[in-house]
Amino acid sequence: MKFKNTLWFAVAVIVSALQISSCKKDASQLSYGFSMIYMPQSILKSGGVNNNYPVPSGTDSSTYNYVVDQTKGKVNVILGVSVSGPGKDGYGVDIKTNSDTVRQLFTSGVIDTVTYKLMPDAMYTLPSHIDIASGSTAGTFYLSIDLATIKKAQYTGKKMVLAVSIANPSKYALNKALATTIVIIDVDALVIGPANDITSKYIQNPGNNFIASSMDAGGRWGTLASWTTNAAALSHNGKGGYATDGDGINMDLESGWGSPQILNGKIYQTITLPAGSYTFDIAPFVWQGTKDVAYVVVAPNSTSLPDYSAIPGNTGINYAPFTNSAVSFKLTASTQVTVGVVVNYTQDQQGFKTHGVHLYNYPKHL
Image: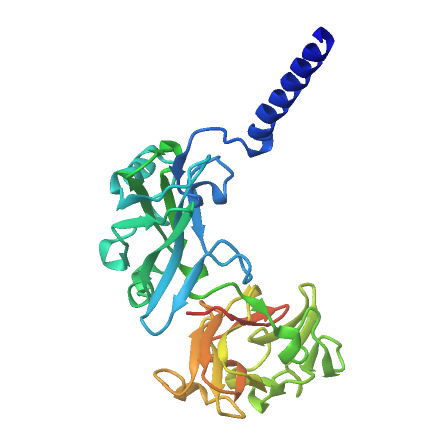
């Protein structure tokens, strides 16, 4: 009888132990750590080195950190909050800007004040608060940039800086080191967008190296293949626009040094482009020695370029002096355009040389 009682006691102990064990969670089910609220964008790009958040962050659709609302004329920069640790309860935080933080960066010399500018109040709108529902850990809000304002000429080439912070949490604590995001908007990269070089797709004989359709007897001067060169530009024994010399093979127009003036000289070709934003560029120059103003010209809906005297003030074309070298233009539909150069060399000893021309488009142009 004593043995039977002992056996039942042992069984009871084992069963009790199993019941207790079954009530305990596996280690993987246990919650660890503290719940703290932070801004993911404050470490998204630097990995914790700093709180900088560049906009745009990339050049393809998988890395865009903004959403364009053309109807409202806004660029909505994506920001947000999240909670770390085991917290699953709802919470809210206030959203603020901190101009003093940016000014301290300027004063300390961390960022220069020539290129970087404090974002003015008129350029943006921002919500004052965000609430995250129970069961969620994160939420998104937008820093809305006014397109018309950021596209003003005074901001071209600048980087606009704004410190966005979260504060006054309704629950949990703030991770103060990650409670501020320094938004840095590269205006040109955002408004113009990353350039795609489409030269080889649309321009025939673009250079590097240029090809001549014919050469003069001396072997230096020629005429460019696939380009139209008018009679005025054929100033070297009936050849012109192409040269090979100590500077290599170039698109080349020169007057002086024994060569005649080039009055209303033109080199161009006609192409058809789909709707979009573009830049036609003849730089970098090997030599830019023009004394009389010369023009890079884009003429939509035309199979030629206008005469030199008809270029200044012409609203039907896009043009720029050689000091700029590039012409940007926008097409709203598939359009035939003529691109090239027009010069009027009356002074002695002047000209230009370039190894190649380039055509770019901007699929994200705003």
